[in-house]
Length: 224
Ligand SMILES: [Ca+2]
Image: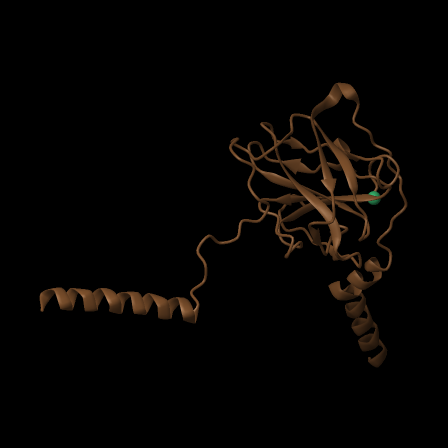
């Protein structure tokens, strides 16, 4: 009876998510088994950008794709990594095909987010992740990965260096029908739009009350 209890408790401890996250975090770098490259005849759009270290975030890794905008992932020990966030969309519902190339650094990671991407909360809206699916240790999403994006919907491709303190120019190429920019055209939005209305502060409220008092005083003086 006691032995059964011990086995049950041990099994429960092994199955819980925090335990699994710790063991996976110790093994973030998986064997590089893919050297995918988008051929010139199947490129739908391409852009260049620079990871210059002006924007960084504490990145995630290892998303388990399930088609939703909130997949489970792990907190990487690689914090403060430089990144660029690129809006993408497609006129077709299709598997996203994308590839990172660069001569400036050897190891990238690429994460797909539903709109919006918030670098302060990188676990939110996460959809898919790749480390070394492209050439060498560069990143790619392939058709075989099956990371489906919906037609006319804005997504964010976040490309980061594997570790912090690395900068460089990069090229991102899309396949299928996907193109860079938000769905529906228009200006490219910021990845995470902060609320436009500032929060009320005590000093702001005091100034507003003084302004009201001033108007009331002026009306009273005019009537007198
Ligand atoms: Ca990589």
